[in-house]
Amino acid sequence: MRLFVAIRFDNSIIEALEELQADLSQSGLRGHYTRTENLHLTLAFIGEYGDAAAVQEALAGVEFRPFSIALQGIGRFGDLYWAGIRDGEEAEKLVKRIRRALADAGIPFDRKRFSPHITLVRKAEYRGSGALPEVIPPEASMQVQGFSLMRSERGRNGMIYTELARFPED
Ligand code: 2AM
Image (cartoon, rainbow, N blue to C red; front, side, top):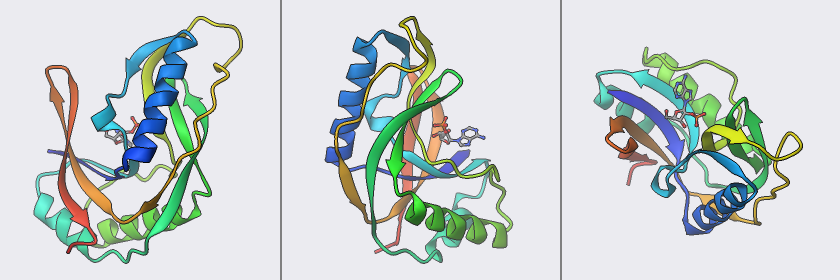
């Protein structure tokens, strides 16, 4: 199964991201918009891996302290548009601890440099002028209380992400 580790959002961030997607759409950006229930911030991408229990065990040992995140700006990687987060240092530290735990347990993961982004639109086509639509995310922040092990499957109408476990565990 295809696995990744992510921060899931509370309603304040979700609503701000929906508003941002609506603004992008109104400014003429066409593409595959991430469905509301799929909005997340990826911390580590494991990919195809059969032993979710081993991943769960590794993640259970990751030290975690709550921290806040806030939306800031939009950017793009080619035809993928994303929302950024402000002061990503705490998320970055968490990513380091997660990657260390996965590596120590012999679990493979994508080792690309962490570049915090919330994917809003894939395969985007912009016909307006300028490189990026002039769109600013609404002010929104949240206290991150934990992170999730997620499964990703291809459904009939796009990707289906399912939370397998939350950390720190109760
Ligand atoms: P993306 O938002 O930039 O597409 C599930 O696929 C999640 O894992 C997505 O959020 C995706 O990021 C992220 N991800 C990170 N590295 C990936 C990779 N090498 N292949 C596929 N998805 C990856």
